[in-house]
Figure: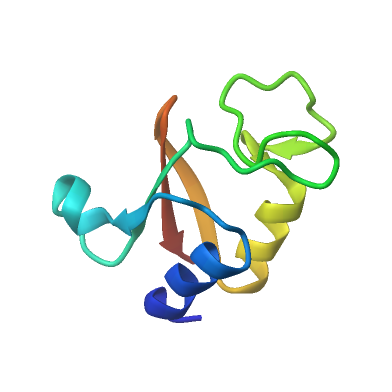
Length: 91
């Protein structure tokens, strides 16, 4: 999936308020910048992103498994920059 389409779906499907590009954050090209602090609540009541989670069966590297799979199915992965900043990159 292209970055532009991914960004659109992050706004429309997931209702993520803050979505920008990695170019805006640090000049790195091609990625997506998200705030891990403005996390969307998932259907099970947990946050989409949780750097400090102890729900290890529900998260992969601090990303809710539903979102982790959704990103992977589209050829993207999430990487924490710091506890409040998530970057998405193409596989």
